[in-house]
Image (cartoon, rainbow, N blue to C red; front, side, top):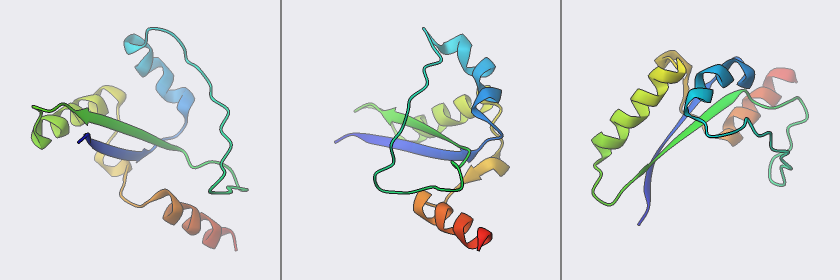
Length: 99
């Protein structure tokens, strides 16, 4: 069974991360047009980075956490930027703030 560690963090902008990501990239950046069929976000996208560390069969949870922490450090993501809420909850909070 596939296992992973998923981290969400608030970011100022994707453009601010591009220079930090480019040293790892083989090409790009590539911009994807996304059609949200589940969630409508009329007031704009949430500025959230999603980082996923896929664990191998022999990898421990600790291995994955260390890898995620190392990537966060390279990207300059601070603990204070981490988000625990689900996307649907974040969108509901945004709607409540605009009402």
